[in-house]
Length: 151
Length: 151
Image (cartoon, rainbow over all chains, first blue to last red; front, side):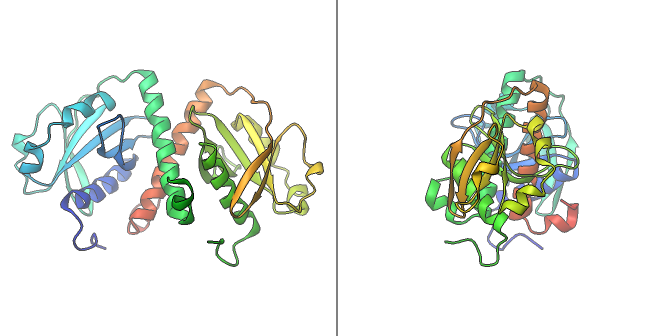
C-alpha cells in the first residue's frame, strides 16, 4: 500500500529507507536521539552491531538549510543521505553515503568507508536503541501505557 | 482500560509486568528468544543495561509443568516469577525473584541477588533486543512490511 495521503515527504522517504535497510539485514529506528540536540531520521543496527544513520532529504532546500548533519558523524560508523530521483545528488558530499529512496524502498548508490566508533559509545547507543525501541513498541501494544507512565 | 476480554491469563499478567517494569525504569520486550528453544515471557533492559527475565505463571499447573525456567538463569542477571494474588507463592523457589502482578501493574515482592553475566553475552543480548524491538516496531508502524520482508 502507498503511504497514507498527506504524509510529509520526509516520512515517505523514511518508510522506504527503513524497508531498504531491513532488506540489508539492518533494524531501523526512526527519529532516534543519539545526543541532546540531535534527532536522526533513521538510525539502524546491523547484524554485527554496525551503526548507521540515514538523513532523508525531501529536496534541495531541505538539504541546504540543514546545518546539523555533520553532528551525526560522531554517532555512527556510516552516514547516508537518502533522496528521491528528482534530487540533484551531485550537491551532496561525496565522502558520505547516498541512498536513492521512495516510499516503497531504497537502495544504496554510494557506501562510505566506515569510521571507527569507540566501544563505550557503541555500547551506549545500542542500549539506548534497545530501550527506546522497546518502550515505543510497548506504547503501541498497550495504549493505556502513555497516560500512565508518560512514555 | 482492562485487557481485551478473552486475553489469556499469561498475557494479562505480562501486560501488568511490563507496566511495573517501566515504572522501575526498565524497558520490557515480551516473548523474547535469548537462545534456541527458549522464549522468555518478559525480557527487560535497565538504565545501565541490567538484564532481567520475568516468567508469568497463571496458576500452579502452569508452574508445575514448566521444565524450562532454569534455562533462563544463564541469560539474565535476575530472574523473577510473576503470579497473581491467588497463586500459592510459597511453592516458588526462594532464591529467585517474585512479583505480584495483575493486568494493570506489578510490584516486586522479592528481588534475587544478581548473577554475573559475561560481557560478551550481555552485549549480544542487548543487540538482539534492540534489533528485535526495532523490527517489531517497524512491523507495527508499516503494515505493508510483513508481506514484503517476512519480519
